[in-house]
Length: 416
Image: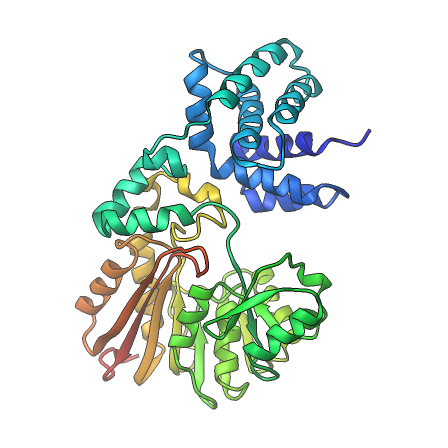
């Protein structure tokens, strides 16, 4: 018997909520055995995870008793379709939710589920409370308000949900953004040029694109692309990317170097190194040299470099529209990250030649992991100057939340 799309989504979501599985990993694994309705299943899984706070607001409004996890999940799936999937008639959403209860042997709750979802369908009034409206925990919103401003938070919060924009970056060995847009349109893929990249405005599957297969472009978020471009790497230089996988920034750097020089890319795990190798081969970027390395430990075998990119592990609060479960992290769980980040930045700086350039970057919106780490580094290490720093906030036609700082080395104070 073939599972229904909603039952498949239910099973994936149950793993995410009950076993703390990562949404993209659980979804990718499940979709390997699915033939039909992949797009619907994906939308339902990501949507329910993304909108959990909003969905629970409506459920708790009409249910005052404690719910079994499986029943709450069915109600979330039904409520998401009613509130956020315009193409699904509410009657169908309710009927299929009742059927889903029977599919998982919870027939006893069929009438209850029907009644609750009818109440939600008749209500639909999402309050103006920012946490409920955008399904972002209040403590995260509070942190952003304190660190940035009320106006800034209100401006970017509407952009933390929904399908994030996808950017195709031209492999400038072969073509520019205008030429890439033409190649994509010849394949029926629409887009618009933004900052030397092509923002895709139609459905895109990498494996089905001839231009992608031929190495004419790679996918990289726009904020990440701008960070890598800010390194201003030149042909013939030696450049390090200390936490490189999956490699988007490295490809941007290699293109800036016109595939001339040495670009050494490191990561902690072999399977992540393979991601870089496979894409570099497809793109014809043969200056990229990969190897396993622990960025927290100084490695005397790594050569001195003209430029170093230090994109550190972080809380990920800038990419919650790509990985929606990140928003539900407890803030206490990321308290130790700045210490790790400062360590990696300090070790990375030791590879830099005199008068070289280093970029420290994260994909988070948290000043404790961003500006304060850079400030701590500069206060503890003489001979380095902050040239500039930039914070990007999510928007509907731009990149993810992101931070980078460009640091210049004036002289060698470390003696390595």
